[in-house]
Length: 440
Image (cartoon, rainbow, N blue to C red; front, side, top):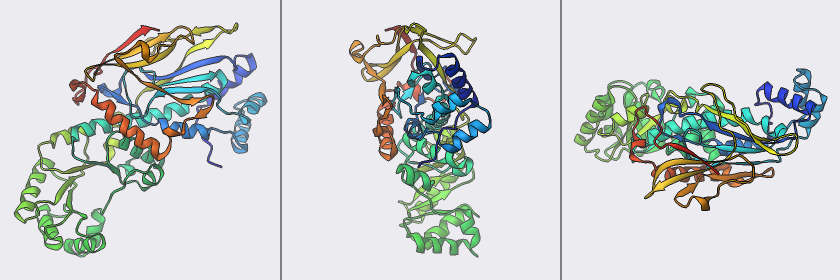
């Protein structure tokens, strides 16, 4: 049996469940919405990531003997709630933005419909997955824009928790990175893996030349040699002397990268290694990558910055109740009115308006009721953004696994092509397109 994801939950979800079962409101039909009030870090767009992971975790959201025993021993809930959780299966529906899609303030990224009891306890799980993965994917997309046609590899596992490292590799791949150093991400999600040698390899050997010869013997001349353990110019010369002019690549991990890359390229060309590629991997972020645009760099390896969201480690999304049934069975729109933390009630349908293929607004149609929801036919100049992910408790497997990751990556490429030019700038600014609310 897969490991349960059921206790990846804040305690107050269960205390609300317990109280709702006591007062009879647990079975009221509800609509919860996951959205961001703003784009964190002054970014101009956000990237949805984590949806496929969330769906798989939802499959495993089950309460076995161990989970129930913990809840009972810690007196989190009473016997009635334990009986409910013992048989818990999400039977509602979830719709949302496709993974890899762009989002903006107020975008209804996920809409969860079900009873209060079955939907409220998914809050923490949904937010922990999408807040982390979307932050990484947003940073990765910005880096991909800065890199242009030059390949990017994710290599930040050592700067993250062991499971968040795997999730980060997945999110970065969806948003434009081409490979990861993380083998578990490769096994689990089908992401291409890469990696050759670290400075420890060179330091292990009596000379740099010995290290290079051994690596070439093991991996062939197509490998990439790390040339900055000692003197970079000497490292270049030693690399070509050992491998010949067919050496696949050299890697630079230190120094003033624009200057060093130019010097290395010039020396490689002087030695006849005109096809040997240069990879740089020294604490890069989107701004450092952009600064190297005119430098003779062929590819980038990014670590700390991408797995931590490049200074924005969470997307800042929230999960709020926006509609519910009242005691008589009628539907009521509800919204939080707190200062700077308000929400907008009502079930929503989202569309991206386009003019000659370029996005002009995020159009969100709000329904006070439950059934009257806008359809794509009502917005012919816009692209519908939501898809059905879970229908009556049945998860659409097309969004899971390695195939789901590839589909999300392909969708992100298409969605990003719709961005207006101003969205491609890296400076802090307002969202690239406005969010416009209309009545359904």
